Length: 554
Image (cartoon, rainbow, N blue to C red):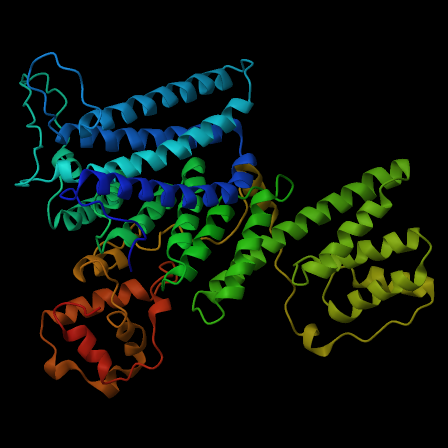
C-alpha cells in the first residue's frame, strides 16, 4: 500500500522543490474538494454547535502539529535586526500558525454567540468550513515541504532541532513538564515513523485520543513514503470512533470515507464501509424522533452488501440493516397511527397519508416485527375508503402469514363482515414463535436514554478497547507496517482441525501461548476486520508454519 502523494526532496533544486510542493497542494486540494462535496450534505444536517465543534477539533489538531514543527526548526537569524526571509521554513510555519489561530478565534466567537443565544449571521459557518478545509490542505503541504528542515542530524541541512530549555520548578509546585513527544513530532529521522506509530497506538489505548491523532498525523505529513501511512490514516478514524462522542462519531465517519477514497481496493475496505454505517447507527435516536441517521445507515449498509458479497462481515451487516430498517418501519407506523387515530377520527383528514405510510412498510420492510399490526391498520384504511376487496387482501395475508398474531381474530371478524373467504394459516409459520416485542421496562429505558436499541461494535478496525497485543495494529507493527495476509488465517480454522494437523511436535513452548492469545482475539465478532483475511484455499500444511515463524510474513 502506498499513499498517493509526492515526496519533497530537500536536497533538490529550489525551483524543483517549489514545483513539487505546488503539485502536492493541487493534488491534495482536488481530493479535498471531492470530499467536501460528499460531506456537504452531512454537515448541513448537523446543528450549528456540532459543526463548530468539528472545526475547533480540526484547527486545534493543526495548531499542535504546527507548534511541534516550529519548535524543531531553528531559523537562520543572526541576532541582528534583519528583514525576515519569507522562504525560511519557520517563518512559513509561523504564518500558517497565525492563520489557524485567527480562524480558531472566529469559530470560538461564533460558538460563544451560539451558546448565549445571540444573533449572528449563520452563513458565516459555511465560509469558515471552507476556510478550515483549505487551510488544512496548506498546512499538510507545508509540513511535507519543511520535513527536510526538521531532519534530525542531517548533514546537508542548515537547520537543526531547537534545544528544549528545561524549566526549574519547586518540589511543592511541580510546574507543567515539557511535551515528551516534542522531539518525535518535531524532527525527522529514519525509522522514526515506526516509533511514532507504536506510541500513537499506545496513547489511543490509554484514552489520549488527541495525542494519538497528533502522532498519527505526523506520520502522514512528515513521512509520505512510510509503510505505516495507510494504517495511520485508518487509525485516526478508529481513534474518533473509540472516543464515541457525537462530534467524534461525525469525524470518524468522514475519516473512514476519506480512507476509502484513498485506498478503495484495500483488504479492509469492507470493514471500513461497515464502520461508516455504524457511526450513523450509534447516533440514531428513537423511532419517534429524527430518522436521518437511520436512513443514512440503511444506505451505507446496502452499498456495503452490494460491493462485498463474499465478505465474512456480511452477517453483521445484514443484522444491522434489519435493525435500521425496523427503526424506519416503526417511524412510519407511528406516523400512520397519528394520522389515523388522531386526525382522521377527529377531523376526517389524513387517511391517505396513513395509507401511504403503511404501504411503504409492506413494500420496503418485509421483515418488520410488527407487520401484523401494519396489515390490520392497512385493511382498516381501505374499509374506510369503501374498498372491501383491497381490505380483504390484507386481512387474508394477516390470517395466512401471521397465525400467532393477536390480530388474527379481529381480521377474521372483518373478513366475515366483508363476506370474503378466510384462508388456512401457513403450517410452517404457525410453528414459528411470535416476534418478541419490547416490554414496558425496555420501552421506558429507551425513552430515558433517547437512543435506538441497535447492535453495534464499540471497537475500531485496527484498535480495540481491550485487545492490546492481539489487535490488527499490533500485527502490523510486528510486520513492519503490513497486515500479514496469511499470518491470521490459521487461527480461524485451526480449532476444529487441530487433531489432524498436530503441529505440537515442532511448536516451541514460547509459540504456544502466543497462538492461544491470537485465537482469542479473532473469534469474537466485535473484532470484525480479522475474518476478512481468511483464505479458504490455505492448506492445513501451511497453517501451522504461519504461526511457528517468529515474525509474520507479509
